Image: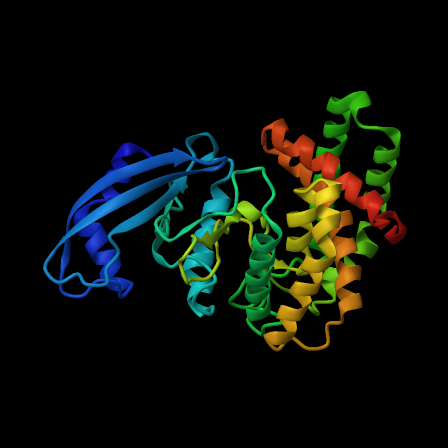
Length: 353
């Protein structure tokens, strides 16, 4: 987003109209907007805005988070912006309060591929569990998985799935997706050379060959939900010490309909080295299942969760290749590759092939 576009979104008049439409401002009006802070993430740009009002503004936000595209990825990842705007404007309002950040405004410009989100700012009340890439504590991990399970339960086998909430991929869509992946994988393997062992090459080839059978779990359309798609623990905000509030999930540019363990495998098998994963994995899966039951999810056994988790870990060997294909830095995809391969071996996921 250019500086002129930033000014347009951050104009007092625009913000006044947006907050009134969202029910966050009554008789007052935004008088002044100040940029308090701004920073880049891997694929987006975050600006923290300070607001001053004229007239009645009790309960209106004093600060906002303005999320826009990262200049380097504005074109290549434009669909992620469109997707995230759709989540916050269409799905989030139907979810229980306290799971995701409140969104006051979201727009996607189809012509210019520019987009923005005006989100609730929890800087003073919440924080990341740790600095990336340090794993969270056991208690923090439990709180994160509990909130993730709450979100999954809200959409579990929901009648809106594929209707007004996301789209189903057909078997033909899945086959085409794997064909694209196979092309990326060939180039990935060529570039890595002897840094990708023959054992791992065989694993990739077997996964590609058997992808149609493995995809049947997804195409059953049973025990599925809206998944986050990028559920590492640094996409969760935890209440600061002494603050009585809930964990919130953010960054929804990769959400979709999927098997729920897609998020759990990404959180643990992709992000954690074996010692940490083995120390927490079983307890977190137990907590996740207990939370589903507490939210009324029925017919999904603990054994089914384990089976789905191993299935998801196996599928996640594709993740580093996709990340490489869109020029995510090697410091991310290389470590993800090593960790997920160790998880595949540790959990015996090759048996699924």
